[in-house]
Image (cartoon, rainbow, N blue to C red):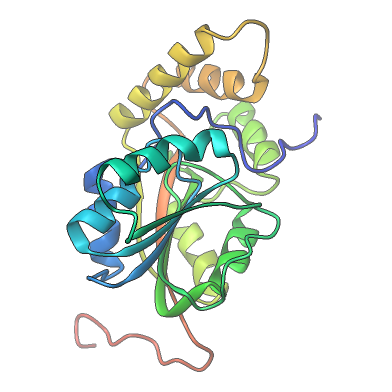
Length: 253
């Protein structure tokens, strides 16, 4: 068996990311209870910086938008300047191995459509950056069908270096890592198919076999005949403190 793909999982910068629409960003902002003055980290932002611009412009948030390469960040810097948002948005190059950001500084952390770390590392690495009751929203592959072909499971478990979980199981892991799980959504079949069509168009322009893992991912999706057994999930959890009481039952018992 080939070794796992190193993190972050490769995603072409110019291809639209899952959960990166304005509506998806607004849903996160609502769940995270963001308001004017809330400080938000948009990590792995991509070259358009759309989420950061929306959060600053519509909600009055103070945003740190971060990625690992200046080639990705330079277009974001230009958009921030063009829209007169330099007082609200800081564009920062980071290393995923050591983000160099202050503990407890953010009311929200948003990772749209990129898988930057293994699941447990995502939860552990980012929890300390959140303020009390701050929310983390992140993207991770999830099993969505009742039955998944063995080839698909083998591919994904090799790729993420661990088991492929259902959304409810992802929320259980989130809870065990010191968060109150708040929401989970997955791309439905038509959204996922549109995502892979964009990836196919990108891959068609690249000679040779690289990036091999992404080509295999697209091929496995095509074999599903439009009914996916694996999709991408967007999970939101609130930082929970030791000894914190569970939330009151919504049905009053």
